[in-house]
Image (cartoon, rainbow, N blue to C red):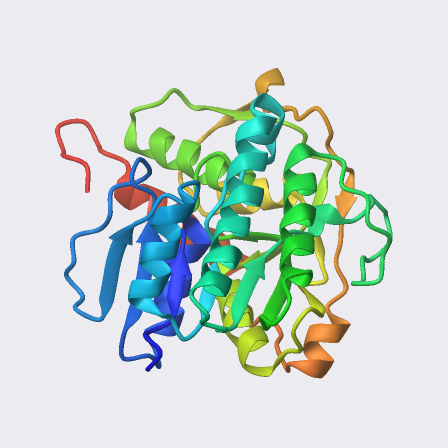
Length: 319
């Protein structure tokens, strides 16, 4: 009998929100984290079955899959940072590509033909100022994009498995690492409010425009793609609206009582910064019935509140 759904990378940003989404309807969910990654949460919810599995250890992955026999695999594990892919491309390719290969191979070796969702990326597309459809030419311009394209190709070429392909654009919200732009802004503002940082907000390129969806809408799309989508058919997950980074920054500043000044930081400039990334969500809307429901203003407000709760004030412990 199949086991519960499995979320890899469940201690991460999207993975943790996907757990929340699945627990709305599932009696139990299996969750994997990396043995040397973020510590696994305390098992306060008996419906979540946590395990530490190194995706680069193929034998460990096979043993874990055989023991669990998941009903579906949502593969969210991987290195998510574009900037990190420039600094250490070998690690990004190892984790994102070989980790995916080991899971696909483990499912095949176990003779357990369960559905699997691969969370790819819009960064596999060739840069364009036009809205990107799923038929847009492929042409990743970063090592991260290359790794996500290879991941998708592995899944599409694994015989006998119903592999579902999501191509998420940027997503934001609570629990996001400060390595990402809106979360970086929110964290800096929260620290300024708490009096633990000087009132200077360090920024990179503010002219870029990005298609950003709330992470809670994004993971709902992941679930629906498996439930209603067609295997090996890619689906963009996006807002179909490109927000200027400077506008997002000023919205966050407007949510705060802090007085800040902006300071350009060269370290926050990426080697390849595409001026605009904008998606077309016609396919997922027509075939699956998904559309985002959470406005960007709520996303930013919730993100800022998340960092306020995590930021210690002088004389007060961290929450």
